[in-house]
Structures are given as C-alpha cells and as structure tokens.
Image 1 (cartoon, one colour):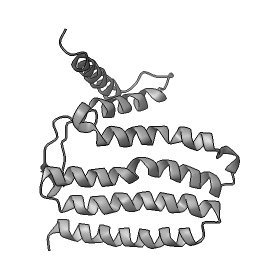
Image 2 (cartoon, helix red, strand yellow; image 1 turned 60 degrees about the horizontal axis):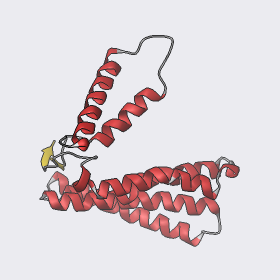
Image 3 (cartoon, one colour; image 1 turned 60 degrees about the vertical axis):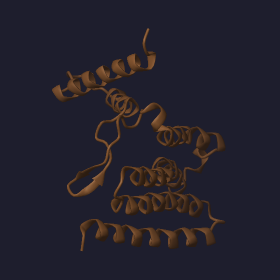
Image 4 (cartoon, one colour; image 1 turned 180 degrees about the vertical axis):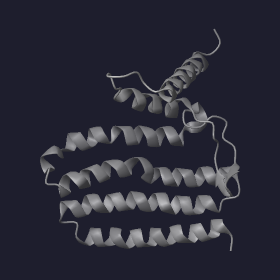
Length: 190
C-alpha cells in the first residue's frame, strides 16, 4: 500500500474521532470549557481533513484547494486552545469579548492573506508542486510575511547579557535582506 494512502487513511480516522468529540462537546455546550474544547478540536479536524486529501493530491491546484481547507483550522486553533487553557486553569476573568476579538485579529488576517496569496505572494513566492521524502509539498520559497514573522520572533526576546549566536545573526541578515527586496518589489518601478 502506498505510504500516502496509508497516512491519508490514518488522518481520516483522526478526523472521524475529532468529529465524535466535537459532537460530544456540542451536547455538553452548557459548560464553557466544552465549547472552547469543541472549537479547538473542530479546528484540528479541519486541518487533519485537509491534510489527508493534500497527501493524495496529484496537482498543484488540488494541493492549493486542500491547503485552503487546512487553513480554516490552522490559525484559529491556537486562540481556541488559549481560551480553553484559561478556562481550565480558572482564569476566566481574562476571557472577555474584546480580548477574544483582539486575539482573533491575527488568525483572521492570516486566513485572508493565505487565501489571497495569488495576488500578493506574502506566504509563498512562485508556488510549484514537488515531492519531499515521497510526500507532496508546495513551494519551498517562502514569502515576506513568513520571513517577517520569523524575524519578529527572533527579536522578541533578545538576551542582553551576551552577544547573539552566529546563526541568529545570519537569520537576521537574511530576514532584513528579504524585507528590503520585498519593499522594493512593492514599490514597483520608479
């Protein structure tokens, strides 16, 4: 049996199990943690469902389609997970409508940016289908938004007591070069 078909079948089984858990959470929806846990599992189900079909896709267009399905769950799962953890640990005071709405800004922007990538190429530049260890994969050339996020993460908590390691300096240099190139591309011809 082909490895992709086997992995796809396992992911479909995981999606089915997730659907059962979501149904059980829906039945217990009077509990706040059941709602947040159900939404977290639902986002995971979207991801596993999309990835199962992405593995058996044969063309770039079908891979793109299933990536769009995956991205229904990928960005939103973290917000639901944080809400669930706050409820589980008894910190419901931090969960307000405006805090959840503020936390959903980045996932919504990510979802919209991923689905409109053909217009701006912030996620992937020049997408093409390829195989990585026998599995279908998209482009390995990342867009400026991905590089920007990596640079922000590296600079978020620099250690001041010693100079940064060489690999951090290299990543910073690559990030700054990519940002300059992308800024020049956005500016267009003068």
